[in-house]
Length: 429
Image 1 (cartoon, one colour):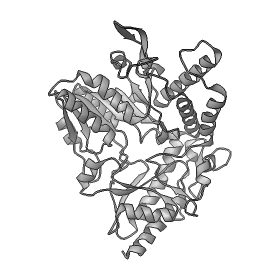
Image 2: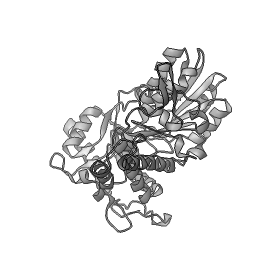
Image 3: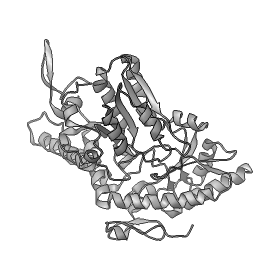
Image 4: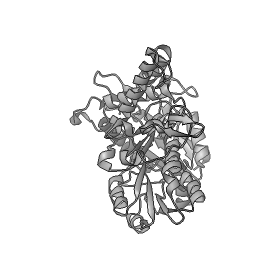
């Protein structure tokens, strides 16, 4: 495990990885030092945090932005005539612009703040989806998170539409032939994970979007596992909706965003009523605000939005290409090391993967494995990862999942491997 992680200096980026797989900023400090929680021991051990697919840890810059908003800028937005309200509104709209830049949307008015990916998908289902009729079809893939399945099931039960899914292969890749076969004249929307949260498979979303559009369907992309690990360009992807969660990209929980193509957004009905989403209200009827404000009823998570903007700025300063290269190198090291352990089976071996390693160890339940690893200070996720249909495809109840972030390094990989070997020894495997 002493082989160096591939250098990324040749990319001309602001961060580089050293021989220990530590990603360092241009000034030489380890980026992990920017994350206060990572300095906390767990079970009297050094913490190897490998549950980034569930949520990432938070950089000091984001935490300070959250604190500073409440200490110096707190006021309600859009409605006040006083300076502090106008200042808070400016910060909130600046954060919307930062999300626009992250996704390369054409206009910040195509960005709706939500609580996260789950709420964003439900928003689409409960606005655009209400126009569906009996017999219309929604197509998803066999690797989707429950958040890109259940909202469509609820919508289908309400409208009479039909939910279909395209098969995946035994390597965890989308069966493209089956996807094409499932597209039809009644397909109204295709829902796609950009990156599988359970397997790390990177779907060819640009090609899939093209095929869906040729069939006359709109496309929603679940980008929860993508935005922190590679650049996203919604204009190049040509998708109609793109959703992500702030806490997956080093931001706070309870905040996220939904991109909606402008031509679609202007025709969407509101999905929640209340303050700040209206133009006029009378007892005879109401009219609605334009743009994203129509979908942000009530007082939003202002501080969370501002802190999300700070997290985005932090990631962009490092460079998403640098982060992607670093995580890919760690994944390659971890994959090689785990494959060398007898009795370990990798689940999801797609050719194109993000930094997620899902695996099983003979005779050891994933929950037991996760518990033993925890005693060694290694935090992983164990279970079905909110992807029960995917687990059914493989005929298993769940997996152990290690997922990487910019602050992980080779010591974390070594701790994972050592923990798995210890579990095998304890179970006599």
